[in-house]
Every structure is written in structure tokens, then in C-alpha cells.
Length: 148
View 1 (tube, one colour):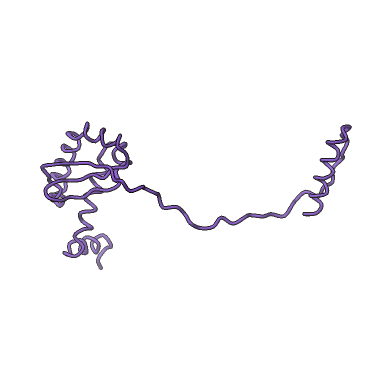
View 2 (cartoon, one colour; view 1 turned 90 degrees about the horizontal axis):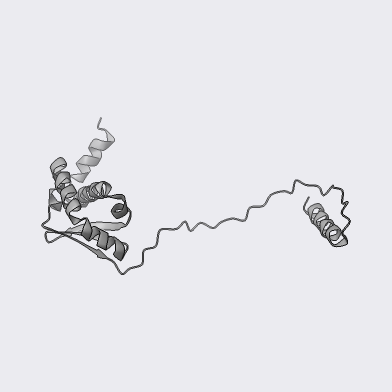
């Protein structure tokens, strides 16, 4: 009987699912990048012998340009370790910031208003000498008694 990882690797070798193998290589490259670049990279793609990085912020693009030699060396090492990623071997590496606003997927479930049964019974001594405070405490007592 085949194991799950064998079945998945067999499926990835199919021509119509070749993009899955590319996505794995892109994710491996992202995992090797410095933390600031990894967190601010939306996605990668390869086109016409150029590897494109789509970034979140123009400041990160400047950092990307500053660290381009590091990224190229990481890419070469990745290709040596994982020969399936040879398609990413590019003469150019470019980055750009997209003009589309990035919104994280939010949980659209409605927040229910939680209610609970009042555990207090409104039984306390009101020994306050100030009349205003005494009235406030009596109103609190009446509300507690309504809910219990």
C-alpha cells in the first residue's frame, strides 16, 4: 500500500499539476529568505528568465535591492540542494510593489452576544451616608434583582 507522501509526489509529477511543484520551490525559497523579506513578500513568479518578487511596501523593495546578492546566493544554493527548482535559475531578479490593496482574510462569522445568568441576588447592606451614592447602589440592587 502506498503512503500519502508517495501519492502526492506522484501527482505532482503529472504535467497538469506541474504548478504545485513550482509553488513548493517558491515556498522553499521564501523560507530561506531573511524574516523581513519573507513576511512582506506576497508571492513569487518566474517569467522570461526573470524571477519576480511581489512585495507589500516600497521600503521593503529598497531592502530587497540592498540584499539582492544574498537572495541570488540563496537561490543558487537552493537549486544545488533541490534540482527540481532548476526552473527558478534566472539571470535577473526583480521586485515590485503591487498597487492593489492587501487585505487579510477575515473571519466573517458573526460574533454572538454572550449572555449569562446573574449569579448575584442583590443582598447587601447599604450603609453609605452620602444620599447620591446610596441611591445609585439601590438602583444597582434593583437591576440585579430584575435579572436574577
